[in-house]
Length: 325
Image (cartoon, rainbow, N blue to C red; front, side):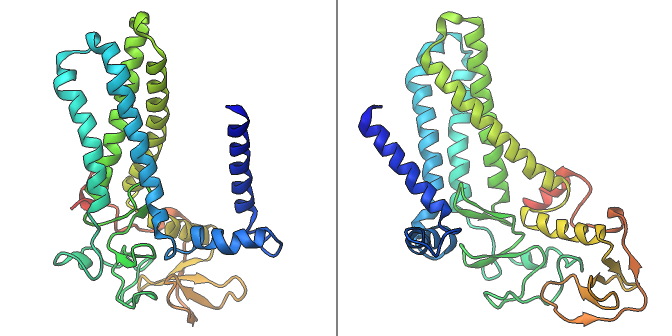
C-alpha cells in the first residue's frame, strides 16, 4: 500500500469517526463544525445535497459492472469449455440482462401517489380502524391519506400502499412498481446464486480451471447472494404476514400495547389504548386523534389472534398478487 496509501486510509477513517461522533459532542469543536456543516445536511436533511441519494445506486451499478467485467473478461474464457450450450445461449444472457433491466425499471417507474394515480387506486383498501382510520389528513401535504399510504419526505408525496424508500434504486416502493421491485430482488438472488454455485461446481470438478479470478468472482457472488437472499426473505415474510415495511412498526406498537394490557376494543369495533397514568382515560389508536375518551363498555385484548389484519388474504402468493396489481 505504501506510506501515501496508509496516510490516506487513516485520514479517511478519522474523518468518518469524527463525523459519526459529531451528534454526541455537537457542542464542542471540531465536532460542532462537522455536525452543522456535514452531519445534519448530509444525513438528516432530506432536501439538501439531494445528490447523496444517488450514491448507493451508483455503488450498486459499479459493483455489478465490476462483477460483470470479471465474469466476461476473466471467468468465462476459463470455464467456457465446461458450460452447456443452453447456459451460453439462454441462461447466462437472460440472467445478465434481466437484473439491470429490472433494476432500471424499479428506479425509473414511480409509485402511485395521492395526486398521481390510476382510477380507484386510493380506494383499493378500506381503513381497518386499528392502524388506519378514515378522514386522516396528511400533516405535510394536507391531503386525505388513504389506507396503507405514507408520506415520503424524499419523494415529497403520499405514496399509495407504501412499503419503503429503497436506497438501492432511490425510489419509493409502493403501488405501481411493486412487481418490478420484487422481480429485481429475485433476479439478483437468482443470478448471484447461480454464478456462485456454477463456478464453484466447475472449480471443484476441474481443479485445473481454478484461478484467482474465479475466487474473486465466487467471493463477490456468494457474499452478495447471501445479503440479497436474506433481504428478499425478510420482504417475503412481511408479504406473507399481510403487511408492508411501513406497517411493520405500526403492528409492533399495537402488539406492545396488547402485552402491556392497554389495548381495548369496544362493541362498535373501535380500538383504544388505556392510559398508563389514568386507567379511566382512553386514547384512540389513531395517532392523529389526541382526544381523551371515557369508555364504559370495552374488552381487553390479551391475544394476537384477537387483532384482525384485514390486509392479509391468507397466503404469501395472494398477498403478493394484491400488492403487484
